Length: 321
Image (tube, one colour):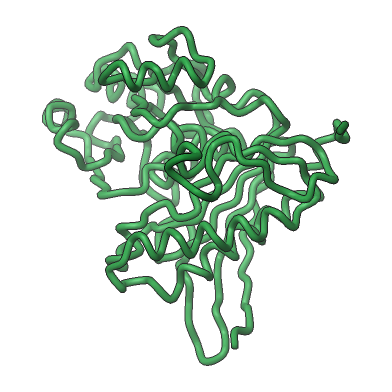
């Protein structure tokens, strides 16, 4: 079956916002309830139902895992009603399941859409990531630099002292040596417990979030989602896949990746125009979390299009029975 070739991002963007909103609202009743799996499943069910209402011939390229591990929104699953353009879908129905279960900040529902074949099919492995916001010369920092060199280079580009730089790092034992080195530069570090998509997005709005640079390793699928957001908002990002064993190298081969040492720039992770939507589940620095009042749920969604560079924030007050 042939599909329209036009990626009508303007028309599809509001539909994508509805998808992320539905997932967030479905997980609302599980905020602070201590059940990560139930919160994630509620978001998955709602996101899938809404995706299948869209006029797209979609394929999930970043999803909940392989088919034998995830019954819905698995990598390779076809979504949409099949009547629109062929598109890639990258999603995280609930980025921050632990954050949701514990009612901690920055839990989001996240989804991106781009023309078929333009999102990196990142295997479920770690990715070493580095990101900065817009307004800097190309490659002012790089993954080849040490953490200290990155801070020094960004401070020089900003015309400030290294002590004026603030970094975002995922708090994990694997980052202890890097954090120790960064402390010696005098830079400030905001450690986050989960949610590195949000961590990367923070760099794009440094004046609001106070974050100048993100670095460290996290999930490769989340790296593609973060690159999608930065492509819309502006900023630079690099990612290098990390492999711990032969099984993970096999996942890369299955995804068609042959150069295991390649460093991907933002526009290699996302090669064409993309649309991105994220809805707050719990309060965060990007969007507000779900607000409850008698008879209503209110969500805030950030909706972005790389083609125009537009960033739209939408508040949706939805009657609930």
